[in-house]
Length: 402
Image (cartoon, rainbow, N blue to C red; front, side):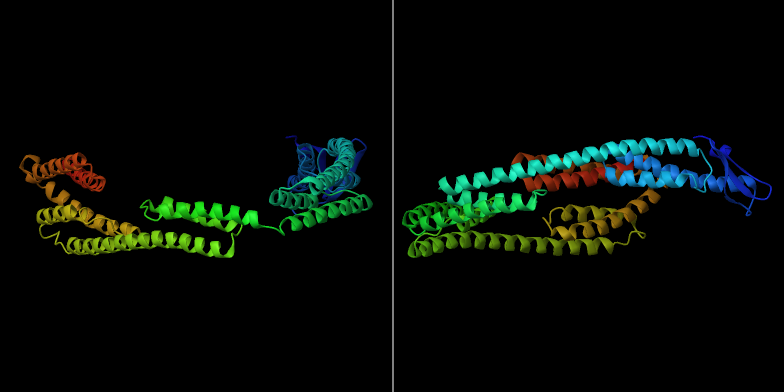
């Protein structure tokens, strides 16, 4: 960055001057400190102007700014530059503002031309929409699709801006006539719906048949999602005759109720099992937290291993309770580990029987995992893997502390 202070000076009486190509002029007075501080104050003002000009240049170049607004701002800044109370390269900044003004004028002219093009394009697009509407009104027999298309045309119509009022009014009148004509033809068509009602009955027969087939499914999520899709399809389909509609609906609803009733029963049983598992884990956790670890760390460790073995056999518990239970159990494990570490530090590794016991526990856990894998029992495999991971972790900690 240039040394903007070199473009100014401060008299002995505190008058601040700025140097320009046209000569020096005063920009203010400084009595609050040293001349250097005074120059720095007016340089900061210049840098503020410089920043504003740079921002105008950047926004105009990126297309983020309105060229007309940029032009007005550039002219305002340029007009005030000759009397600005700043110290810096005023001539250089003036040249930048002059160049910015030229560019902004060019872009403003281009933007105006673009608006004229956009206006012509808007008129052409609305004309196309009107012509499409008139053709649909005269020829289409796809009642629902065409009705939807008229809505889409109307929605798009509302987004098109820039057409002059007279032309817009004439086009709107043609569109309204076309839409009304289609509505009348569609109303006449729907005056006789016997064939469509038969078709609707056929569609709903298929929906009922699929719902009844799904009623005995045990794929709970996928089936529930599919039944909801069938319900949406039912609502979207035309109505059959009154008698057929009622009978089909009763069968359709009965199939849904049968599935959701069975699902509710299964989920209730699952919830009961999880509550029982939660109760058992709470009992085990109470035993673990009641262990007198300080009195006999070895006995506490043995008791905790037994508790951990039972812990993983309890089954699944409600998801919202898992983190709290595991956290409290880990706290007990940490206390036992700390007590055993303290005891092991006082015992020779060769005289420590606990390592042999823990290796035996790991071997037993590995055998249990192999048996679960051989049986192909996913639940037992997951529980055995968790138990083996815990026992190996204890063994690694014990061996690293020996």
